[in-house]
Image (cartoon, rainbow, N blue to C red):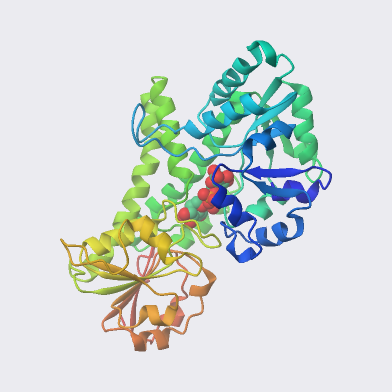
Length: 453
Ligand code: UGA
């Protein structure tokens, strides 16, 4: 919305949320307190806030004044009831649609921006239509479009400025042209794809499933590299130069995290099962199984390097966000790796340049320094890298933040307890910098490279 406001100064963009605390944070005079860390966003909010970009918790009033409404609420995986563990929970989409139905005036274009199961637009349409049939509401009308978002966190502004494509699904040409006209302010029309509603909804799930599938594929090969002596970066390069395969999304790592890939594949699996396509469901579910296995594999390798036990070992985890340049920790591989180590009795010291102690505590489900009864493991937070590594037996690099590159490994080695290990799960460290420091190095997907000093 900030990018739209920036390119369309004559359009008034208002973000509404029923959570007034969130809105207060977006209106905070101190821009460092914005709820989301995203490169470039703070600057846009600084430039546009209260000019043509507004944040309000007066949801009903803003709906009544809007010509176009983007439903951009979250659609997490259902935790209970029908489809639990697979289907998306649409309660926020539904309650948003009900509010739009109740408070909108005149003709309103409703754009489904949230990632949703196929045919959700039908649900939105039904709710909206029911409000137009009640006797005194005859002047109300709606047009529902689907326009899924393809931006990635950490590069969101850049992705929106120069997207590979914008997708608009729907059948009402007038509304489609109005929405397209907004994007055409800075994106060439050739890059705007027009489809039917269901293709648009399914394309979003499919795009994420394909991206996740590539990661699981390369992660599967990383394990084979370690077993055979091949090197994952060489394999990625060799296959990525084939223009049919392409070189993006071929970085092996500790498994994909984030709020989207797992949720969207679960959704696809649910949808396939719903239509009786069990083979299709099993095929996609395997992408998730491999992802879970990769995270577990890393914890197991680490524990095995310590001869099967990390009880009373101090282990530093570098990085807690699910990828660099974001403070989002949802489904981060760090959560699973940290929990495994703590449950095996380790003291895990966590460092991240953007994630707060409070957030880590929420993700792990237990407070800092709280000893887990069964294992005596615990975690602590350290905002300073050199403090974090002090007295540790191992360092695990889980998120590829710039801060973890070009560290003085000799100084770090001097602070660690020997024998000391570095487990680089994102291939972020130049092995030459480790040589001669007295540190042992393990890097994901490298057969022969891992060495003991
Ligand atoms: C993803 C998609 O990339 C976006 O196109 C989509 O719009 C978004 O989901 C969404 O549905 O909202 P995002 O989850 O923000 O974006 O981040 P990605 O860059 O896709 O990374 C996801 C995970 O895959 C991260 O944990 C990342 O470290 C991992 N990854 C990515 C790899 O392990 N290897 C790679 O080569 C690339």
